Length: 120
Image (cartoon, rainbow, N blue to C red):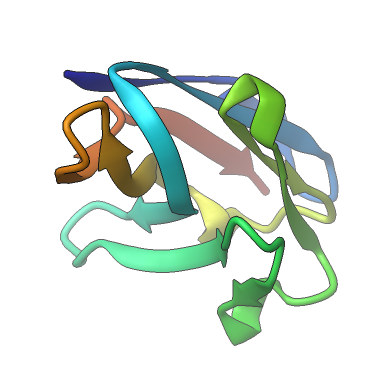
């Protein structure tokens, strides 16, 4: 099995910064893409940023220039550096990863979520 463990959420004032981390562990042969999603109360879960094994990145327009996704392939860990945070960034942030396990079977897993609250 493959598990994701997230950390780094919390309460911050508008304009502040937070750094989220997500570490993958278990029967991992390789990880393709890793990404961060968020879900605000009463809304659907949306992709925020993603990064491939070749470190190609993608962001939603509302976070471009403020958020940076990166990964450490040796540690199977993805990060999300969030700067200039706004109240509308408040949500539960989920980590996602897909790849191949030791049996060369595809997996896709989600983290448990970490709450980010931005006060105005």
